[in-house]
Image (tube, rainbow, N blue to C red; front, side):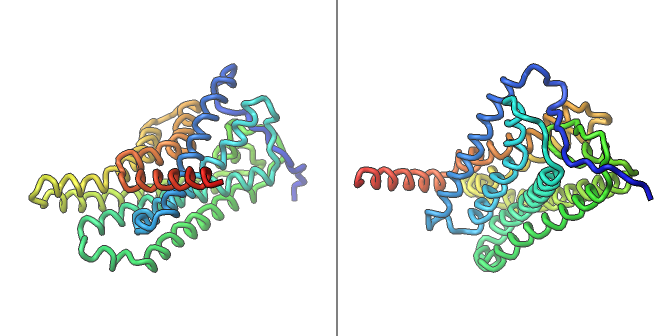
Length: 311
């Protein structure tokens, strides 16, 4: 048996190769984080307050807004804290919690995008049976399944990561407690956790991406069979927002996997795109060309203005 002096606190070294840019990054990331919170809160408010948006598509969009709020809040507050000049330390328990919620919400989002692709597949390919297939019970089961799958995935990765002893050094060479960066500090061989983590994350992402591609292939075939130009445009417009969001999420991931030896800075930029930029863009993507969401938001603001005037 080997005696270890366990680490009780980690030090986050921050985004690689960005020394001297703290003020610029603080302003940029603060603006993105504020926009992400505001945009997703508005989308969620519009969906809850409008009866017209109580449909399967907007039910899953509401779930996406909740996950985006949580996902960007997993890493952004601590990152903004040390960029503003406060301490870079994070307790061992805080690191475990951050790691768990990052992978839980990240995996859940991956599954949710797949479920949303299936929803669009049913809406385009089986329009007359859409409300029967995507009934309230099915939507709740699919939503709960994404939550539970994300939790199971994260429990496995977090258990593998933090069952290893950490006896020093305690400097995490990254801006949050990500699995690869933390495992480098383990006092025992982390190869099993590294292999399981890489396989688990890679395999789940690949399966979800494959199912999304299959769904949109079937959607494309169905749209091509529509004779009228207006019908094709209407069908495509119902999928364009989700398809744009998929490109924003999977595009950076595919780029980084195609790099044989990505630099630490490049890897950090890709993760920031997924952690902060995508949650900021999703409300814009889903509301920019969506008349129903815009109308619901106008109604919410109009009702709030009336309440203020009455007071």
